[in-house]
Length: 272
Image (cartoon, rainbow, N blue to C red):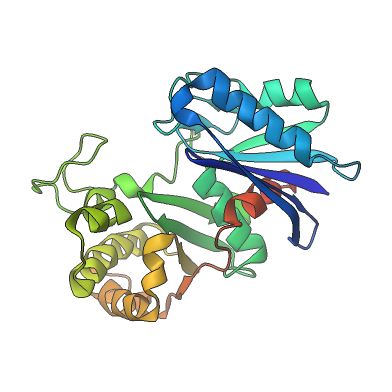
């Protein structure tokens, strides 16, 4: 049994995950992130301590980036004020006396979809969570692709309009996150479904050109719009890439919703 821990800026969720990715004993506590590093870290330790049972053999943790999954060091996530180069993996292993792995939350969720969810059985998977921001994960041959420094998959910060007057929080104009995330939709109070699908379709067309994935899986709050959004995205993508097989690339909703982080964290610990 693996304890999956999903650390977010608002809440920490934990759950026991068996080898079939079945989740039990889910608990949530507030992160209290705005109260600073010491308080939020105390919340994490408390959540883990309350959730560990005698069946738990390891702990998987997913957290907001940027972080280095190779070392388990959380660098400086904007959603966790005061967290600067925190050796979370090492600290947790010492505290709880068992193997721990720390992974970027979208990478972990993508691995969950690839191993147990909507992309099960596919070799190359592009996963994106379109929520308040846009995060992504790349799964190749059943493993997360991290890149040289552990920062691959930051798909939300791919520019689709370099002349845009909308500047992303990362500093670049026209990032897909700045143009089509839930934060944008909340700000304008409404959405133009065709425009949203066109922007996402243009972005995913570039993904198809770059990766030629077996399948694209989309999760996050914005995808709750449902099939009308997916239909339009599927119609746009083939015209935004020179890949002649783009129209055959499945673009599907994610299987895991609120438990994606818990299952993903556990999947990383299960050998992802």
